[in-house]
Amino acid sequence: MNSSFLRFSSITKKIWMAFLGLFLMIFLVVHLGINLCLLRSDGGAWFTAAAHFMGTNYIVKVFEIGLFAGFIIHIMLGIILQVQNWMARPVRYMVSNKTYTPFLSKYMIYTGGIVLIFLIIHFINFYFIKMGWVSNVHTSAEGEPNFYVIAQELFAQPVYSILYILFFIVLGFHLNQAFQAAWQTLGVNHPQYNTCIQRFGTFYAIIVPLGFIIVPVYFLLIR
Amino acid sequence: MKLTLKIWRQKDAKSAGKFVTYALDNISPNCSFLEMLDILNEQLIEKNDDPVVFDHDCREGICGMCSLYINGRPHGPDDAVTACQLHMRKFHDGDTIVIEPWRARPFPVIRDLMVDRSAFDKIIQEGGYVSVNTGGAAEANNILVGKENSELAMDAAACIGCGACVAACKNGSAMLFVSAKVSQFALLPQGQVEAKQRVKKMVRMMDELGFGNCTNTYACEAECPKLISRSNIARMNREFLCAKVS
Image 1: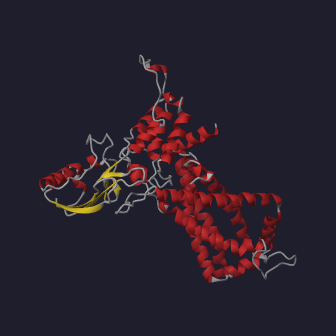
Image 2 (image 1 turned 180 degrees about the vertical axis):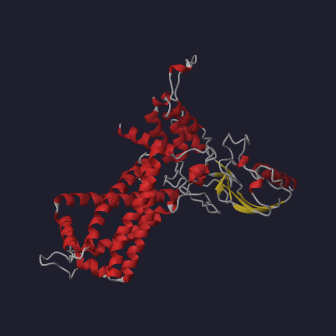
């Protein structure tokens, strides 16, 4: 508990958590845009071009550092806050709490943990190949990994696709609570805007995961 | 009404506690919850047993001394009331009622259902006040206060510091209590003078005492007997952020 990271106040840690969470939500939309390129019947031309741009553009590379830092700090803060929360009640109640709370709001650490497992699998399947840490048989004429073929092969596996869909449903529940919670943590709570924030959060939490889910459904059922 | 009570009994802060079951008969539905415990205690005293120790004072819902976790809810199954204002008609004949003390690291059990909530006093000592010089009272209209802010400040000041927010929160967080105390001053011009120091010091003390972090489940708001709003937590976050960056 002596680390300077832990010495930040509870509210400082939460504000960073909220800010980085919102930043990651913006990134998710960019990622969705690239994934939806997989749906085009162009032999992966758009998807490959987008992947090439994301892998080579210097501005994107700078953002990539921020993105990784964002992920790591968001996850670390989530774990630290949760451990402190567990420590705050060393003796549990015999009767579990019956208070009404928004759906799954009590289980953010668990939905977050499931999303983290997916992220690790996703990194092994794509980012590790991009970095050359994992061997890959699918390469383009220029010697770059052919992510279109890799994605196609993964989504052709029903087990992978079903797990992928389940992970995004869990992410949807995580985001539904996270969006309004982030604004509350950042101090934005006003009767005039609360409903709007709540509805946009739910809209985002449905539409964005649904956009990701369409891709494996397309590869499993249509192609 | 015939009831079975499962009550946490603990001799002192250092002893291990356990649940003890008591059968109670002929309880009027018009009894308050604390009166029902009084009846139990009279029977225990007649049998030369130790009465159940529980905190209570005004029994009018305004002192904040009640601290009973009843069947999984702080202050029991009724909304917006303290345990002393809870009536037995909210239960059914033959019910089993489990009564536990508040559970949180900063609220150690002193005996049975009584917990030490002096952690809240320590937070208040860090800034839950306005410093004024003694002397003749100034003309009230010298400092004008907007109607909306005076109402919001009054709503925040309704917090009785019972600790139900901490008891209900899955994280044992005191954010609703601290934010109500920060808000009642932050909303008024008299509170502005010490506002930055107040929020920083009160939050630091809250953290040092070992309360958990808010994860926005709003169980605190749902169980608050005085209906303190979560908007106070957002206000405290704003106050804290502004105090840190300015």
